[in-house]
Image 1 (tube, protein in one colour):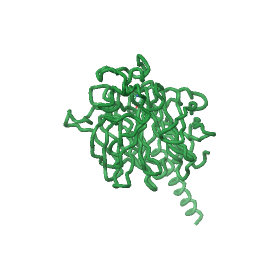
Image 2 (tube, helix red, strand yellow):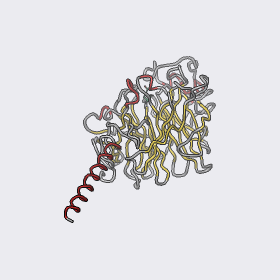
Image 3 (tube, helix red, strand yellow):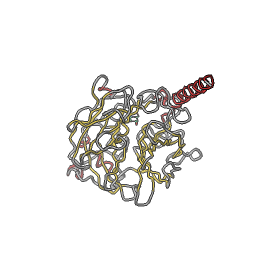
Image 4 (cartoon, rainbow, N blue to C red):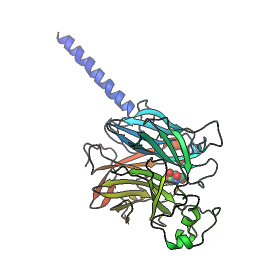
Length: 385
Ligand code: DGJ
């Protein structure tokens, strides 16, 4: 009898060890239930998650992570596949839901033809018409970053497939609510005159980049979406040759611009904007503008989406804070079940082998009015304040 009990114990111990090993295999170098920034993060198939520049759609008890599907090598920075979607109930274990939006392989004239640049996809849910709406930064194939467009796609299921709707330059024909008289009356360079990001020969207002692009629509590169408590949705994008951030209200379908928008942080070259809200205040986490290389983070607070926006300190604190812990912001998510603690989500880009990019997810708290992000090699939101 004792022999039988020992055998059963032995079998149970081996089974337990096997389960633990399986868990490790599934979750890369981490035990399920922790975030290990910068490590390989394996999905349910044991494959490193491929959702860069991503964002989270939260639907009752499920999180959907959408991001750029990168491929190997430097060419993998352009869109060879599309937007990848994963789902999770706890933010630690992710199920591969496949490609939510595919690039078009058989039509080189299509806006999202294979090889275009398709970055920072974000999905929001429109309860008015039960539709899932995806926006992303789109650059037509072969034109570098000069297109500065926004792409829009829709689906009636969160995981897709999404149908491409259109590519636009936002707010064509509209002046922002905080336009200067000099924009309206001033001269401005020709549409063909382009400047490279971070290298403007003069202040963007002197150049009147806003006026230059008013008829055809404003430039829109790094972007994010934000849905307020009242269901109003906003598109936040780096505009005017990256020099100035625009915040733009979407129309009721979330598939276009309402024409109401404003300019902020003029000449600050903010990239990678991500907006969130706490206690009625709006916050932005952003970066500077240095290509794929990391730089010091930026933060700002405002009592309204329309400002006034007060720029705060670099939210990253401690060693390597001047490089945002080698990351660039992509999304900020409230900790499950709370409204006062947040998860900072950033990308650690590896442009020479795009598919190897890593994820930097860290606790974000608000001290006074200042967002603060500190490095933790391994943490869980259940046990970290
Ligand atoms: C920084 C942006 O944040 C990225 O999304 C990407 O556009 C790179 N620049 C390209 O250099």
